[in-house]
Length: 109
Picture 1 (spheres, helix red, strand yellow):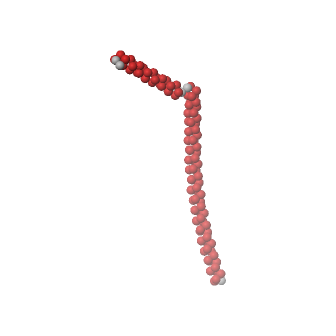
Picture 2: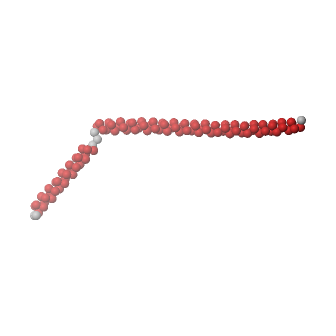
Picture 3: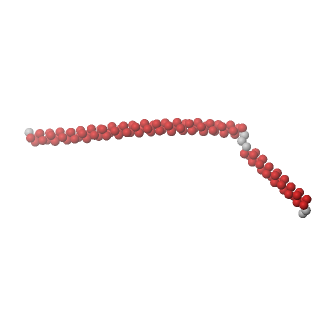
């Protein structure tokens, strides 16, 4: 193979490589491009996602508020229960004292 044949073969090889590369780029571009309809659909999905995130944030805020309210009610109920138990304990103690006093007075009298 002489010099001219080598240059022609290398040129044809480079031209073929360029053509294959350009064709591959065109195929990738053709299959991956986004159409106007797809852009509209993507925008609709994005707005739906934003609305869903807002609803989720509102639900989380409501749940946190409700949880705090229920925790407060629970603490209040526990305090009332402790007060009622102390009152019951005092009433039982007073009842026992009165019963003991009554038994003593019966024994004396």
